[in-house]
Image (cartoon, rainbow, N blue to C red; front, side, top):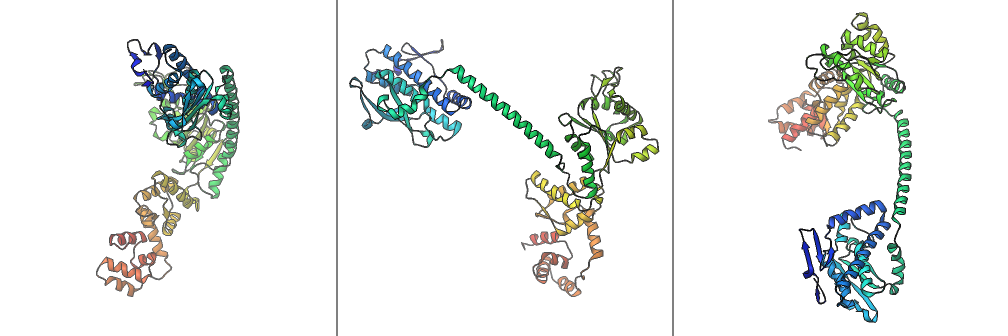
Length: 558
C-alpha cells in the first residue's frame, strides 16, 4: 500500500514472538471487526445513539491525529499532500475500508491552503457491522471512519478540518461517500458535528446513566407491583383454567373454593374420580396467600401401607433397610405452601393418627428420629370415598375427619351438570387443536346429542380422553358419533332407533337400492333420492354420515 512514493506495506513488520506489529518503529494493533462491532453494540445499548456516535467519532479522531503526527515524525521528508495520503493508505492496510477519491471533485494544494476531497469508503467494515447488528439505519454510521479522517487530515493540513459522511451503505446506498474540507468552509456541518467532538467527563456521564437506571428500576418495580395487584384482584373473578361450566352445583363449588382460598383453613374436596378434585386444589392454592410457595401433591392410594409414614414425614439415615441418607417427607417439602393429600381415605390407621397429630401440634417427627420438627403447611385433602360412612365403620378416624372438613366442597359428577359436557367438549377441542397443530374440530349434531345423553361414568377425564382419541383418529374436520368410543356411540344409536319420530325408509326405496349391483351405484342413487342431502342419504343407506363420507371417498365420489 503506497502513499505517493512511500510504500507503507513494505514497512509493516509482524513480530509474533513478542506479540507486536510495527509500521517502521510505530507500534500498531490488529483488531477483529466483530470485536469492534461488539463494542458498538455495547456503547449503543449503554450510552444511547447520540452519545455512542460521539464516543466513536472521538475514538477515531484520536487515532487519526496520533497516526498523522507519528507518521509525520517518521517521514519528515514527505510533503503535506503525502501525509494526507497516509490516512487513506492506512485505512486500506488495516482492512478498514478502501478509500477512493473522486478526481473531478477533489482539489488539494495544502501549500496554498486548498483542501476539498470527495470520495468513497468502499467495503466499510463499520457500515457492514452496523447492518449485521442493527439492520438498516436512517443516518450515516461510519463514525470512527469520519472521526479518523477528521483527525488525520487535521494533522496533515495543520488547520482544523472536518470529514462528513454523506451517503452510507447502512442507509441503503451502494457505497459510503464522504467529503473532507477545512472546517471554516463547512460552517453548517461544523456546527452540527461540533457536539460529537466535544469531550464529555466520563464520571459524570456514568453517574447520569446510573441515576437514570435507578429511576427506571424504581419505576419498573412500582409498575410490577401494580400489575401484580391487578392480576391478583382479577384472579379472584376468573374461573380456574380448564374449569368450564355454568351448572348451579359446579358454580357453587367454584364460588366456595374462591371464598375459602385466602383463608388458611383445611379443605376437604369430595367427588367421584375424574371430576377435577386436584384441579380445584391447585386453584385454591393459586388463590391463597401461599401462592408463592410450593404446592406438593401426593396420591395416598399409590403409597404402599409400609411406605406411607416415610413418604409423608420423611426418615432418618438408617431408619430402615435402604435408608442410606436422611430424607424429608412431603410435609416438610410443602413448608410455607400447600400439601394436597389426594385419596386420603386410602391411608392406613397409623398414617391417619400421625397426620392428625401433625395438624393439631403443627409438628412432625421423621421415621427413626426422636426430635420433632415444626411445620407450616395448609392441608387440602380429597377423596372419592364416602368418609362419613367410613367413620361409622371405624375405618377412618372421626377426629381426623372433622379436622379435615373445616370446609367441604363437593365436585358434582358430569352427569349432574346438565349442558356442561358440551361446553367442556368445545373447550377440549380447542386445546387439542393447539396440542396437535390441527384445525379445531367441530361436533356433528348427532355427536353433540350423544355427548349430552351419555352418563360419563369417568366424568371430565373420560370426556377429555374420548375427544382426544377422536381427534387423533378423525379423517374429517367434523367429528361424528362414529368417531366417539364404541360404548357411547352404540348407546346413542340404540336410543335413537327406539325414539325415531320420522317414518322408516320406505320399502320401495329399500328394494330399489337393494337391487342395484354395487355400492357405488347405491350411494349415487341414495344421494339422488335425498336431493344431495348426505344426512338423509345416510339414513336411506342405514349408515352414519361419517361412514357415508368414508365410502364416498373410497368410491371416488368426493
